[in-house]
Image (tube, rainbow, N blue to C red; front, side):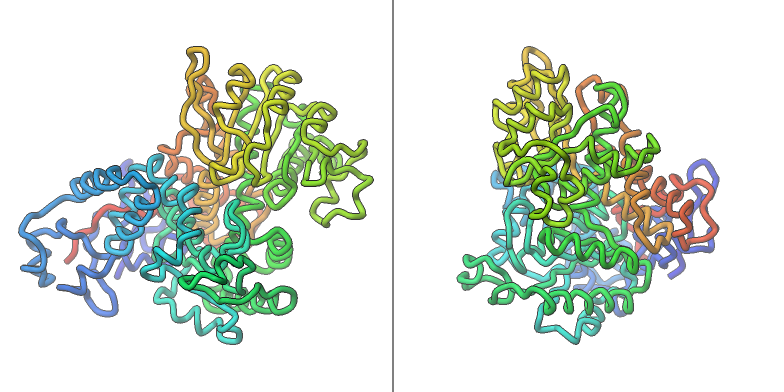
Length: 589
């Protein structure tokens, strides 16, 4: 079908109307905002009609099919006589979902909706993002992954196991869509803070890609969730008769990396140079190696390392309006020195280096990390993993976090340990004794693994803390003042970042793009938000935020010569908004 860009409301078109939007890929399903007012044909293999149309989640509208559509597509008698609207359907379904008391039941209801009516699923998620984000993603998705074998009904992505070695290209070609723009892939070894969930980690790529669409505007048809199954070391799963993955211990070493090499080569061969591959929830020892290996040859991104870093940096930049000074004026202490901790630390050092024009090596001296063995110091350097070595500074060895806080005197404390309740009362009170307004970020997910709760942070600092967490906490009232905890949720960054890469046709991810994404997010925090102690904008504005992030990332891609979609649109924000997927029902011929 033809896809043209409709005129924007002010009468100005931001791209050539004859060109395809969405990173240069034709909008064959009528998913982008640009074609909302156009008639579309509900194609599957042929024109979908009758019972087939009602069973096709991409085109099904349920009771919202008009009288004319019921006649022209042979739906008479297959639906009750009432004709509904999408808004009424949304109202009914939200009532149903709110009636469930168990979050996992809400998750299952949302996944079943996605399988029967894709547009209505995204309509609910976009219009009720703050309420439903914890349902389709963290923390509920963690429980869903743990029980994925029991709730599994229908595959939602591609499963590539050791059985498919030598045939991965054929497996990719089994997927019905050809124009894939974003792939989220996991091997299930480190799912959130829950450990090795093997093949059941598929809930993470599915959830991430739902957010790429709902929050970032990437078309659902262009998204592909993939799980690489190389076995699991989780004995409980291996003994579970309902486990859906390979029942063997994890492959490692050459066998593992050969499979990943075949996968990455097949992806590029099948989908081209501009498909974004997001590595998700790989264990530390593989995550760093895979990112280092493929970032120069593929368009790859690791959300645990880079996405977390970018969203935390945005919060730090925004918090300077409350703390005063610049990043280089502050001292940072991390609990946790894995993917997230070292990724955040490196991006902070890069931002300090960029702003002050000092070497990154010098900027790193403002940042200290504590791992399971204590403060990372130079005397431990020989025994450290390679990604921890840049953070080994001169200091006496200290075994506890409390000792490190008292010695280093940080103004910012960041938790990425994956271990709950490690920011004890003594640690938080020590931070409050050192700083008038301590900044504490308890980032570990899910909520049960958070280093401390919002209530604890506000109470132990007598309301002086600037607090944010990885999972959501409710507002908390202390001494008559209502505090709204910030959520350093990766969902602020990765959807807009990915969309910016797509619309610019970028071929590589550069660190400067992550800084651009952080800057765009920090700029969306207003004085009204600061007055409530917030360092992140409300998620209700996430689509506007994502458009600005996408525009900033795309601008950086053009500046670095990494964008292939030419000519560059005159107004990148308007262009991003025009390319965004919209879930409103289309009218059928």
